[in-house]
Each structure stands twice: as structure tokens, then as C-alpha cells.
Length: 66
Figure 1 (cartoon, rainbow, N blue to C red):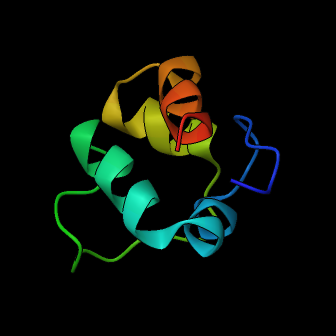
Figure 2 (cartoon, helix red, strand yellow):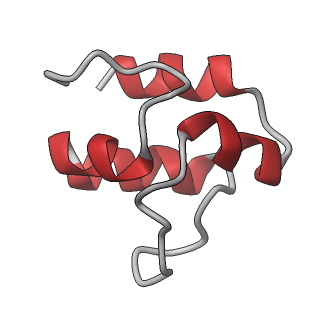
């Protein structure tokens, strides 16, 4: 990914960089449930992870690995 991904990166920024890969990671961690689900693109990765009950650090590392 070109953007420096961190916990303050918005879902919209992450999706813009690598839509399919980001969707897959978010789905794997239960942040979204399918590619047709609505995503609040202004929400940070950190906030989305809190809502889903997963570690933001783990999700960020998975996104960085794309």
C-alpha cells in the first residue's frame, strides 16, 4: 500500500489504496461482513476495530502486508 497505514488511517483511505485487499482483511477480522455492506469511510481503523472487538495493531499489520 502506498499510504502509511496506521490506526488513525480512515477506512476510506485504506480502501482507496487497495480496495479488494482491504475488503478481504476487514472481512477476515469481522469489521465488515461482505463486500456489499455499507462502510463508514470516515471511521478510523482504530474505531472500527474497537467496535468489532479486535486488535487495531493486528489489523494494521495485516493491511501493511498487502
